[in-house]
Image (cartoon, rainbow, N blue to C red; front, side, top):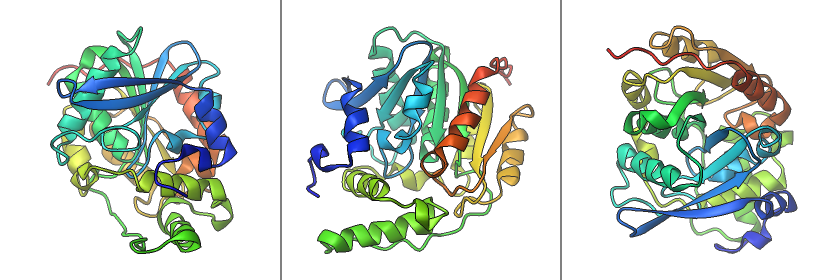
Amino acid sequence: MSNTDLAELAPEIRELDAASRRTSTPFEGGAKQMTWREWGQGEPLLLLHGSHGNWMHWLRNIPALAQTRRVIAADMPGFGESDAPADIESPADHARAMVEGLRALPGITGPVDVMAFSLGSLLACYMTLEAPELFRRLIVVDAGGLGTPVFTADNRSVRGLTGQAVRDVNRHNLGAMMIHDPARIDETAIDISIYCGRRTKTRVMYHVIPDKLLAVMERVRAPIDVIWAEFDYIHPDPELNADVIRTLQPEAELRVVARAGHWPMYEQPEGFNAAALDLLARPARPWLPEA
């Protein structure tokens, strides 16, 4: 697979990409560009992917969510087709670029619901602080940085490898960190892992662990709910993680996706989609009062 050709990816990816409405928005005074894709109509739902990902992290959720919502999937700054901000260490700068871009999209004045996976949860929290008028609620998915136990996955490097060896290492890494059931690691998942990994241009993901999300979440007033995978290897125990969030947001609801690892949206899309649609169908709780 080349470093640039989307046409080489699995048909499932290419077909959903072709069905999208793609927009680029400027940030940092027009020096940088961010890429967004949209599907469907209705109330806006912003999807933020995880580390070393892009909009494809939501490949198997977008069709279900877009039946009733205007789904907006970002390539977050420094990932996929989006440029990295000048400060690749700053979560606030990454979030600011996304707020600027979101405001530039047609018809976005708020309220926007946000569903954010892993690293995306940290940046989503910063976004609600940057522009509270734009957002209604936040659903975090398998989010690290809560000060809970973290396990290191046996990820292997692809440096110097080519051809099938690259695919083999990506298959291994998906099984070590992202997907619980080896049978669920298909060629499409490997395509996504390779494509996105090669396009990561930021270091913001190294500013989450051990408790950076918790520190910023303490300032978030938007209501937060939680979706967690039953068998998330790196951030285990859904109830433990949800209980930490409930120390700040006592009414936070938890939905557990059975038989899934850290990437539940892909591994168990039916269970994940049911959980997401259930939470989104519930009236949003009021924002927490100012401290």
